[in-house]
Length: 428
Image 1 (tube, rainbow, N blue to C red):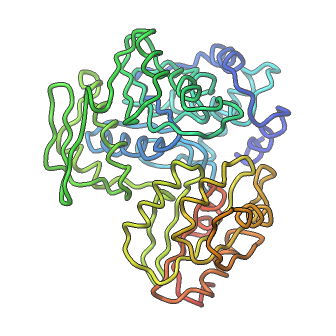
Image 2 (image 1 turned 90 degrees about the horizontal axis):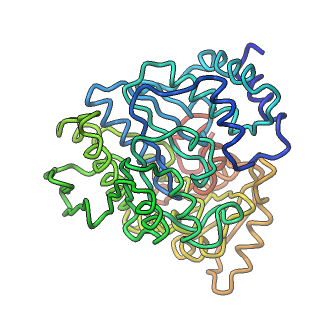
């Protein structure tokens, strides 16, 4: 197999399940590969805010002159987006030798798609002479393949109800799974302002160096600037992160705490912090595409992230009509998501998605119609995100707003042809 696409197809055939939580198989293959990092590793877990946190860590470290490696998942359009080295998305041909390494080392082990691809990306990162490795946990923490790597600094972002069939029925259970990335004696940064007690309990039980928002670090701000204070250090007069949304200060505060905790091994200057926060980019996170009508792209796909999206939309000001393109996985808790955002939506465009895990557009429509106190607004179903966006653009006036949100497949289905430039009633 010479092409990345061939290897990805191979990975999809290896295991009967898409998710098979547990570290034993991954750890055994890692040992045979002799896979290890010679630089500080920062591992990021949480329900929401992981991608933004990784992007800010990367941007600041790059501005400080460090050579970064980042692993995030899932991707929006191309698989290669999952790994960046020194700020650049890796090339498919550079990944192929590392897929070959995993295949040689697995010796018949049945790795899932996520486990196999994670090992290949970790192999590439370990061979890339990095100064810092930034790893986003895929699902949960304790049993996720990323947790096979011992972290030097763990960050736990906001925790909410998602993937409950795997992680447990409440925030305490989910928090315990996320806390599995913590290590004895190593910094454990918790940027959730009200973390589950299970996280604190586990950190204290294993002797992690626990940093809690409001106790070990905090932030304040006005309309122009914000300030951060940690253990013995302050940063004042900071510009707001380039990533939009009120929740980004929580993520940025955790990032600054991590750099403070790693200051001896990975020092960054105040100027690197300012520049990094000013320049950070992350597609699909409250991404506003200017034009007429305004286009907003967001991968909010659980109640907590949809609540944040709703607050951010509300802060944008007045739009005569908001058109919403929405597609989601079948296992999502849709009722609270719809209840939160429905008052802002004047017209729905539900879409099918190209994965068997997705709810159909018809199912989404029926679940929306089943809401007891919903607004009676027009709704339609569409075969793809592109079709749904075309319909929304055809119906929209120049002063309107079009929102595309939900699964990565929904937003990725729009971005796969490049960032759209909408002209009302004239989307190509």
